[in-house]
Image 1 (spheres, rainbow, N blue to C red):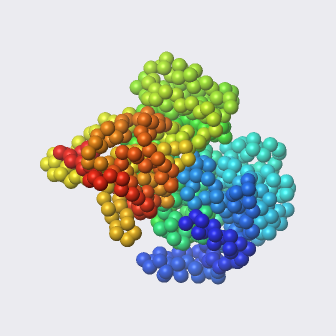
Image 2: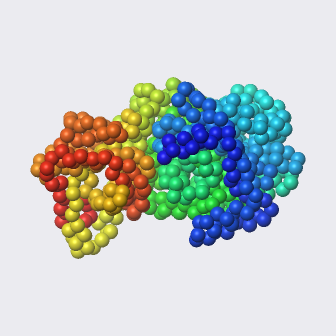
Length: 628
């Protein structure tokens, strides 16, 4: 669908289309929700429709299409979306099946004008031209920096060159980071939770601190005049389309949920804290102006409520806790730590992300004291993050499990030195220190995620076995064990990352189009490569001689290991391995995913296939249902 949307964008560039404003102009009432989608859309579309203006497409690095889009989304409020149609998968640490957007906003009060967030540096001239078409840059009084990750703040420096009167507003940590990024003096105003910047005309921006969503410097901004909440990364999605808003919940939800799982679930406790702060500040928002993907308008209750439900569920199910120590704005420490955290979350471990650059000594000590596992991404050899090591090492105990990894920042504290320090305290490394020899690729992120899952499984092993045994009575377990299935090997590949698993919980689910479901445990490595839109191969094992290939893929592979070493295979058109020993194969595309208690039920459509051997598929029989 990416190409279809992009083609539509190409043909429609420069044309204006109509889209309703995000916020009511004067009514201020929360949009009425109705069961019928059409009725609900009409209810929130009462303000006059606003033009959506698309720029011409420009090319970046010869092959990547960039475009900007502007529209009015509320009283005196304009959204500028930078559309990054072709940003690659794993260009950051998780999938980008449909590109991404970088969203910023201009609010023109009766007395002052504010710009909320900016864009990625790759959009520099295109964004500055678009911004100049919305507001005279000399008239910008405030630049609200929700957080300093470069895809939102990378253009603040160039904007300040053209907006000499502007004062940058942010949290204390944010402005410190921004000084290092901009590398020149600028007017600044530190704000705390509950502080207000009044733009006039009712646009009195109230700030709500939301640290760790997903950087330590993050804050939300609420405008009572429009009842819009500006949340930067929170409540976003990596989905690039011409739709300004969440008009199709079915289209948005898979990307929104995957984004949450990768970035926000490791900070589940911080998510709930931020939502409580919004309620205590009486921020009765009707729309979410996020930093990535469609703005939330039609499904606010459903999608914001999702963050609350998923976070509560993650904390309720957590069987252990791990502290992940990383260094913000250093090498790949932030991104690699997120991959480890995602792996931990898949094993139902609560994660506490700690930035060694900004956390105070007491916070570090408390984080270590409350954790069964310690993850440490190597800090630089000098600076505040390195200084934090003493508090971390000094607070550990020999019962804790350890995972150490390099940050690839150019000046990492040697991981061998760190390992020796912890070994002296009796801490056991779950896997050998993770080393990064080159700029991270898909395989690197896979290594770090799988290592996080391995650590999580070690920490939760006793609890998991106990829960499995108590899940059903022996009689029920024996009865359900009589449900049999075939034997298959699911294979997937994305870039340099490959994975495979033996599957028996497979069933045809539709005739037209031909489709089937496969159940995948949430802590399986391959789960990350089977999101909506991903492609994979289902290999059917033959009834005769299936044991060697099945045993090979039942091995517990170490993190990052090549599952296909010693196995004969050929790539399908999607790159996933077709096994030579298979009786048949099907090339499939994931269409949807349903969440079960400890598995994902993945529904996929078959795109291609072939029978190699005139044999039946091997069958799998069990005596009890409490194991595979």
